[in-house]
Image 1 (cartoon, one colour):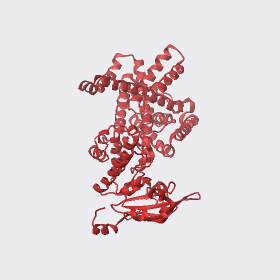
Image 2 (tube, chains in turn brown, yellow):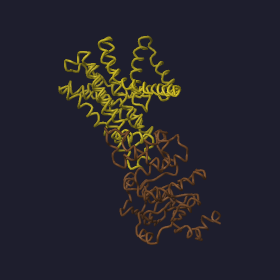
Image 3 (tube, rainbow over the protein chains, first blue to last red):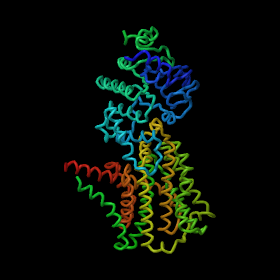
Length: 261
Length: 313
């Protein structure tokens, strides 16, 4: 947070992600209700909200996993509304999942290498020898999430916390400009939580990443996020830095109440 | 540590040497049986390419074996085309059919994929079975003319051995390529693969086409062994036989179906010479494999190997 005001003001003009009137309903339920949200380049932004507020639906919309009923998604100057998941990923949005979603029977180094092949659009080469290709880079990525000494372990044999790290590693292999983390510390011990917070902060600084994450743990949110959006019943009800959100009456009423007080 | 590795490097050469020597050592009947094993071995490996690497269960793959055999047979017998042309074109025709059927099958996953591939396979079989004027129906196509040298068992053996060897090498290269690796990740978690920027379905269709190409080649080569083509080649049980070979030898490994095909056909021949209750022994064998070694013969050997290594360390 110790940045000069000039740098901040300069960055404020640059929005890497912008949604306008994004709407999605399932039957009668408005899962995402006319959401206007924007994320600044290089900033760590959090989306919070009670269970069922529509956070995961919002991520599913951003990554093209489901299509919005109406509204637009603008990523880095491109309108990506209606793009396919794999196209959006190649455009620069990578996602790590809330529920661990990896390749359980593949060694984790191999998982990372496969993600790199995909980024480099080398997957369809039938006769290239894959084992040594991009191996060093994959090692670096594993090192950056702290898994370098488990390179040959199968994904499914990692501990829960390490699988979450692998999730982030696979997402990083795509060299995203925007990294979406869906509850990165869910199910972790408080020690693991601390190291994950540190990991995300480091990645954002070193690789000049923009991070957008959802999280239930308010300590993690207030520790990590530079900007917070509050989602309630599919609607944005408040946004701002942590002081603004903490002091917002409406947020206290619907959500934070007891946790903040 | 270095000793078993050196041994491993010489192993493929040793295996090739043994197969080259076989026509001189063993009977003609054994050579003919081995020719059949080579064809089914390639068929089983092509099935495992989908099953073990791609995570798709192709129950109707017998159809592609049959189409390979029939394309080759019809080109030789009815159109009188040159042999070289027929043996190259037959797998290509099969792969084109594979593209059409694969396009629809890959829309579904798991059991639905298996059943749809079975349905398509049976349609293909029914067409071959009923279209008398073109395929000869259940009379099949007999006395298919071949080049002179292929009537000699030894030459025919070497020809099939060589073609299957090259085909297996190509498939092995593909499984170790970036394509093969990506295919494995699709087997593990197809949905996630879209989130690393890859359109998994295109890869599944491509894998289907590659697999059917080699299944078709296997069927076409079998014409050189049998000199005939019958609708049974395209029946779903042919694909079932291939899947049994894969399960017996071990999926998730390239060598699994190779070993499975050898074991199955030799056991089949041996047990039939002793008793008529072959299906009983096959069932018992599969039961043991499923219960005690779900990763097949190769899995058992691999685990033993790892165990010995650990003991040695």
